[in-house]
Length: 420
Image (cartoon, rainbow, N blue to C red; front, top):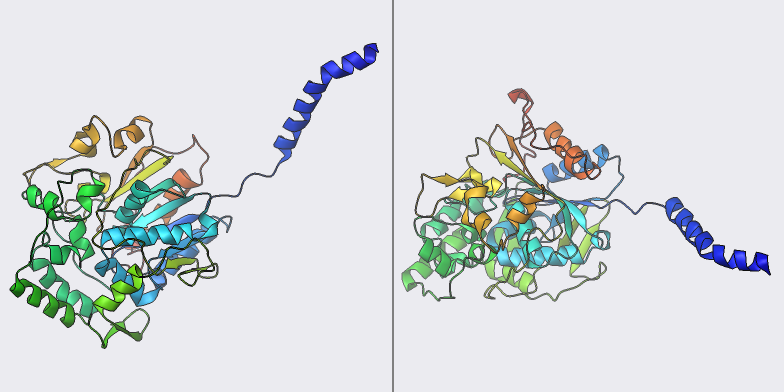
């Protein structure tokens, strides 16, 4: 009887010890995938993006999935989406792509290029499900631009007419609904018009005013439609892709409707989505909301991010001001005074709606830079960031890095087809 009592007393300790042994011996959870989000004028299946995918996969010894995310069905459609889908529509499309891919269901790390960085920011602030864990933003216009970037799309005919569209006014309703880059144009000298008519960035920054309608003049509308037609975005017009070497028949209306008409899907086998483990590409046919929906970006960047790595190009000729790549921007009413992130109203906001201050105070924001122009950096620099900030265990990440300083002869544009 005495032995039985002793055994009963020891039983909880024996069970706890056995459970601990099982836990210690259990296999570690799978490593989170790394996704690549391309920028304006590029596409996920372009040679340069595929090369970058292969370099990363080899560097991590194929220990985790590396996925290039596409908003369209690849190729020219993906490239056109980066111009002619609004940033709100692109955000909806990215959400569909991510949520339909089972490889990303537990979350992921991200490396984003230029406009792709702003797109991922919108993803995090709109739903962040599955969550982003560690994020490297390469030369991203995160707080917008005060001058629209140049066009270097793989299709030069598209570029030929974009400046004409911009000339009609980035704040006009017609251009806002037809040119993604106008959606993050933030003129510090005309903030009232920006807040009243921009359909994307004011909502992302929580600085929007009451929604207002703007009627385009008939003359402007006819001129805009002429420019769109001249770019080949009309029914029956052939648009050639220099990357793929082929032609597609596309029109602006049919192109955008192919995105907005498709229903949301969370199944990887749905015809509305596609993912390929061979090419490392995941894509979707479109967003779940219409171009005229009032967008909502209620979430904070600080909710799930373990590390936010902001990389600025010191001699950037594409993002104006380049401080936007570090979440800084021009002071309101000035094109001369540039405020660093910690001096902006978005950082100092009492509510910290964007979560920048919370991330910074937690030691989760890391500022890096490259000495060259837009998206010019070495493989070694990017892989060094991956080692320090993504694959390194918690607590072993470096602080501010050396900016990837290297001989200029070793520098290259990440991919020949990468425009930004």
